[in-house]
Length: 113
Length: 111
Image 1 (cartoon, rainbow over the protein chains, first blue to last red):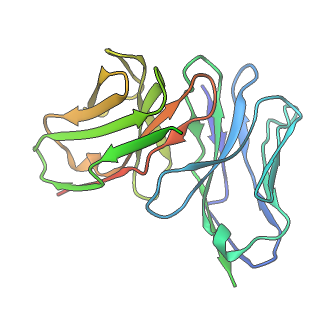
Image 2: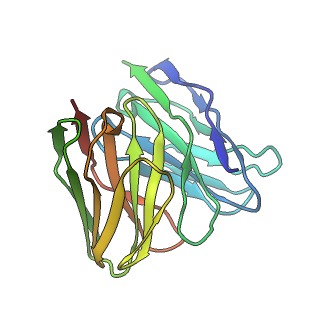
């Protein structure tokens, strides 16, 4: 079945540090890949998405490249800020016609000033 | 612009009591609608989806049911709550095969 793997449960950084969150996926075909961000007490918000293999998505300084060869969609940011503290979810949609999003377990990002 | 409204914001309910959570989407006709559940500290799990009025498909079985009585309304309910139903319930919508937009959620505590 479809699955999304995020191994990092929590990442703790200082401001201006480099951020890298691992995400790998398993499915058949060519899924659409997403990163969602969830702030405390709120619903997830779409951060970025990529529909085409080997393309890059970017938003608010975050980037992720859809690598079909390694089935990965790692999230990166060159210089994190305290306001980036949140939970980040990698997600995948197999494009089956109704958006069955499969989410990873989420990574809690804590950024200290 | 499209808006999604969930109610209530939070609920504290007794085991065995009934539950009804609601969601309304404005500004978009015939959206795909979804219910997701998130256990405390856990990931998001899709419960139901609906492509059209009156049709709802179950994705996982959690002793819950869902209905879509109107094009812009999605209801999640059960007649008897379990302790395991506690968590964060999120309604979401998508135009079609594109990104999914989430509501602000309902925090349910079953005691």
